[in-house]
Length: 178
Image: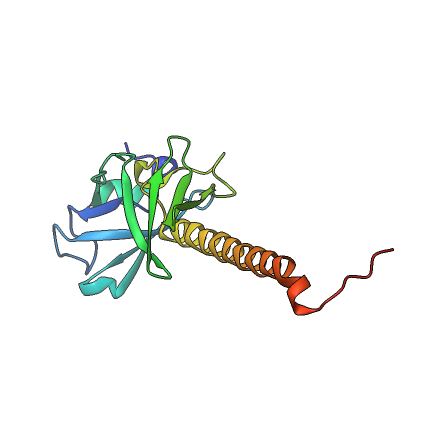
């Protein structure tokens, strides 16, 4: 028996028995939404998923087989993820579900670790511990980008201040000392 409380939108379903005019046996459909309170499942089918269907949990068992997702276990290796100012950004899965992302430039390593706000109680989709939602990677990337530009600002500010104080006597500037 199929329990819709155990389903998630990462699973696909395959038509095993004609369901009214939907008789394309073997067609694989994408689960779009599951409403466990109402016992209703919304699914997408057809070329490029242009058609939508709705059924009860009972109809799911009667007309469909649930296809288990093929999950690639996370390897916790480093993976590339774009560039910031020409410097390679990379990320690594953390065993606790976080994303560790870093950038290396001029001998400096700037890094961030991002945890989705719901990481403590949400179900990790795709069986992932690092096969992240694309949005989580984007948030991590933007946090790293901010950290990079903040560090760049601090470096330039420090350089300008250092140069100013080193050359202030030569410039004829005086500080008012109390």
